[in-house]
Image 1 (cartoon, rainbow, N blue to C red):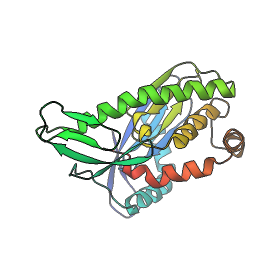
Image 2: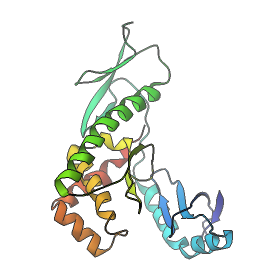
Image 3: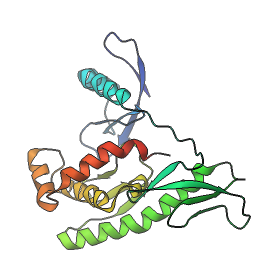
Image 4: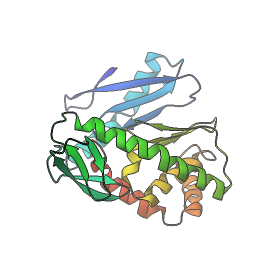
Length: 231
């Protein structure tokens, strides 16, 4: 971890440095919890990392300011609290019944009033659904678009919904299962387009639009609701 001191605001932020053997470029990410991640090639020196961070200090500070200005959302796991699943919200209900601990019945999430780590059960539910539903969508979209990929992984990433690499491997966060099916499809198509364009150039976005003409609607939903897609 590196510590940053930017501008005159005297604020210190930790930067998580991730070294990847086959990475060729730097990738800087800041999530909704102001976790800063810098992905670099494996042999990158500390000096080069520091220089890169220094050269992007203005962008980092501006992004942090934007993130901190967003409405904050904190999970409390209270009765009737709403949880997203495939773009719909369902209330949390506590039950005194002894024959189950956690279940989703299509209309609500029912949880035993005796359990303490509710977050763990929600994670397991979302992960299981993501492995089934997202995997099926990836395979179906790849088949329809004639796209070949190598491996598919469902991850616990919090700073990005999907990723891919030059080997044709694609990854998607299990949290994406909270989004509507069309938004899931958008993220999948987004990553498939990166197999052809490893950037966010005009050419990349033109390719996304060709595959999904209304992608802006799905992208906007994700930007607006991502704050609610964390446990």
